[in-house]
Amino acid sequence: MPLDVRLPKRPKDFKINENGNGNGNGRLIKRVTFFGDSAIPEGDPIYESVYEAAKLLAQNDYIIVNGGGPGLMKAATDGAESVNGKTSAVFWEPKLASFFEGKNISNVTDESTSFSNYMMRTLGLIEQGDAYIVCKGGTGTISEFGMVWALAKLYYGSHKPVILYGDFWDDLIIAFQKTMYIDEVELSVLYNARTPEEILSLLKIHELKLKNVKSRVSGDEAGFVLSTEAKITSESYDKYARHYHADRAGKLVAQDQLDEFISLVNPPAKVLDVGLCTGQDASYLSNHYSVTAIEPSAKFCEIAKFECSNVNIVQGDIVNYELEPNTYKGIWARDSIHHISEKNLDKVFQKLSNALVDNGILYIIVREGSGEFVEEEEKNYTTKDQPLKRFYHLFTAEELVQRAEKAGLVLEKIDHTKRSHKWLVGIFRKKA
Image (tube, rainbow, N blue to C red; front, side):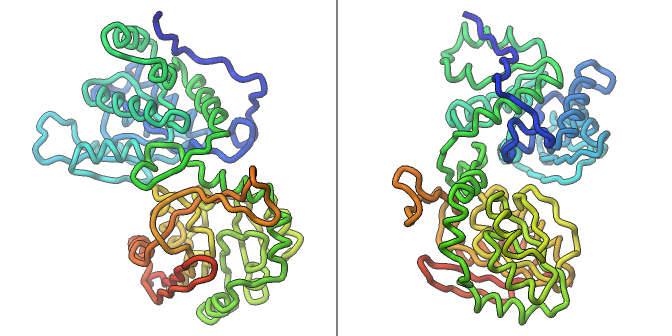
């Protein structure tokens, strides 16, 4: 029987909130990679269709990723840029590939990465995207399609959606079914869209399907699945927020480090607390500074607004929340950065560095070790069936320093401490 990959029906309870996310909770799909032909010119119906698709996604706050070339890659960039959307290019700049179209200087994106190795460039496109739109193309597009299709099957259940864009795909998929060994899982991971609006709906539908995913994430494979680390951690904190707060009420577990931070960041000053929790650290800092704090857990934010009313509290995920550049004299990040997956860490470090003024201080405390995992911990307020779940990316001192220096920060001090676990304390200064 031929594959029917047409737009599936929306679930009955599907609603779109003000942020464009299905049913409201934090979005997992943020960056969408477009694959397509480099030779399709502006004015061609396919070019215009990709332009409109990227434009619509950008209007709904998706970041548009492509290979930085001409044709449909440029159509994706231009569509997003037409509405001031965010764009990213992953270039391939070979020395010997004479039949490659090359980097298109008119495909100007907000950020870009370049590789001289074709396979590494393809992996870069795959890792950057949380979803894939596969358009009409040649052998390059076929190779990209084959790789994301295989990965979607291998990581089924936490896979990134593969959306085939256009009305020509049915014949190709039927041919695959007739001549190759294609199983039901391989068919089920594919969507087909024929309009920009269908792409947008499919992204939101896939988001809904992922809400109960409980996958483990490991370093080398993190780029191939939709990471649920922020969701796992914040949902667990939301569930036990008041118990967690009661367990820590009045305790400053890092008072020595807070006092050291205060000695380094002379008041008056604006400072940022990344990972507010229930507000103990922010409240202490607010005696000296004008404090802004960011926290993904809605329940923690509710508690902290009561406990420290003089702190500007932002509910959000530091991975996605845009910080004002050159704003903070100091950034305090205790027990928060290790809840971010490897694929987002460089971006977060750069974001923190950009938010600091010249000579500003980043004070960071993270769990020491190696690897990524979801930790399930039983507390006196949890049940055996519903432990406290938190995602962790453990740091070595070398990795912490490397990521900070890559973002333009200079090492001032590294300490190793131990409480229930081993911890790293890193103090970095932004270059003037």
